[in-house]
Image (tube, rainbow, N blue to C red; front, side, top):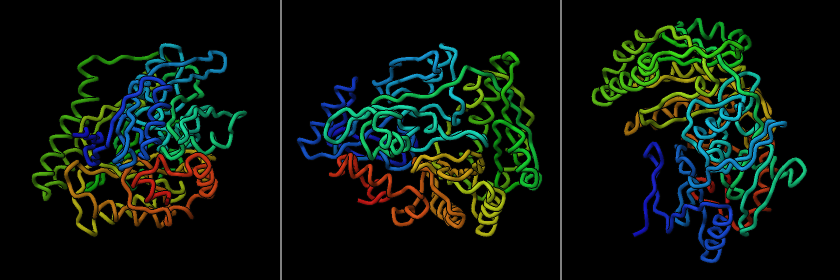
Length: 432
């Protein structure tokens, strides 16, 4: 019987005809050619951290976990080329060992490099782009089973489009990333009132290298997080304090409250106030990746939208009204981050400085009324859904929101005219 596959959150499952674990680019070529000979579709999975069915297939599924090596480091240019299946966690470790870092990161490190880039993964910071903006080169296996190398001088149009490629253009096997010398961050987390955060939002975003905040539904409590680059040395906390701050409160304590809310949804507002009372003042000084990355042990599903930065406060207030007016029970915080404009055709921040609003629900809870309500709000602001997170949009709805949509489709038509790399998700969001 064919092997089954499911994603990290457990909300997406499929049963491919075959699952392969290639250990080299040559083995990827062979796998794609086998699929072509058997008229199978091919999909790729890295860390399995997308909440959509972007990796699902009934054809041939390629897991790139064995493609996890550093290929070459250019110490003068501060670039590194790695195999596409390397996790963000391993990438951070390899870069730190060489005195390098990525200029920005998201807060989860379980994704593969190619998966994170291909779905538009981002961190926060008004002057920093998503991970895809650090890509200076790629290698991929095309639908014909050939290796295509992309850079500013070789296939630049493919590189331009493939940085956020959704797995639609080929199997990415190697990625070259622009890095910077390793740096430390001064991290401050402080509790604030909802209205105060929104009133001071523009000033806070401009005043910090990396700024974000989250709001606890059913309360007036927010936490602001400001990370700024510093030349000060690392200040290590004790193992106990690290565990308490990074594991106990955000996972064990909060996780217990989430479970209680699943059993008794009517108690969620009261439980939210317990979480709000636990918000404290946190100050850390550590290596950048150790500040950016959070420990996430609770399984959840997530939706996230990128909207124009100018609409940030209005959008968050609208989400609060949605929850209140519809008596929704939401146990997870609403997370708000900021990203600079870029030129990547399918990037959610293409052509505009952006605010990203993320909403979550515990795994196993009916998320659809909440997520659909949030999506309607974000659509009103011209919102673009994160490609790796839950949404209900179709190609017809999405195309007008991306100025270079047709440019991406032209690249897809050239590289995969027979839709070897398509699946149900891509059929829905890109069209056939």
